[in-house]
Length: 164
Image (cartoon, rainbow, N blue to C red; front, side):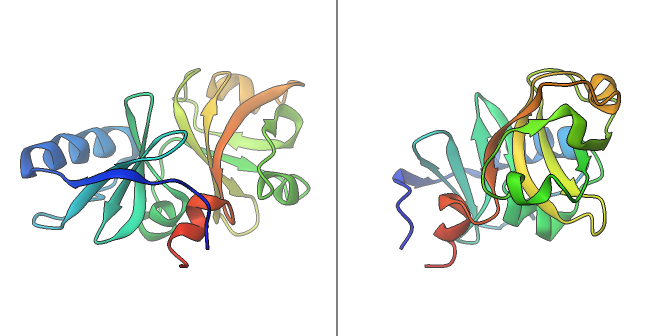
């Protein structure tokens, strides 16, 4: 049983879903919500969770809409991605912040405070969602220090929420 607290879950109106879908399309270039799909929003400890067909596929962090790792696996967006080398993978999947030297490539359009998703270099599989601390260009330079604050990763509480 996952120990993430989900409170005040409620169904969103079609107008609200449409606004979230447009923001998601602008940020990631994917259509996360199909017309008529039931979308619920719930509060959790660190961010709000969007349940699409009862699966936690979206999140809202500081008023920014993004996909969870499950949502990323389903939709595979091309934008806002950061690629890490295989040496970083075990740390990222345990919730560590992403350090500059482990980054191999990054979307140059990424700006500080943007939400980004992290994938591995070999398979391109989504590993985590985080907040960019530096720009995509700076990430490509592999400068030392933290580049991304890890918010949600594979095998964390939010991931396990859908396994219950």
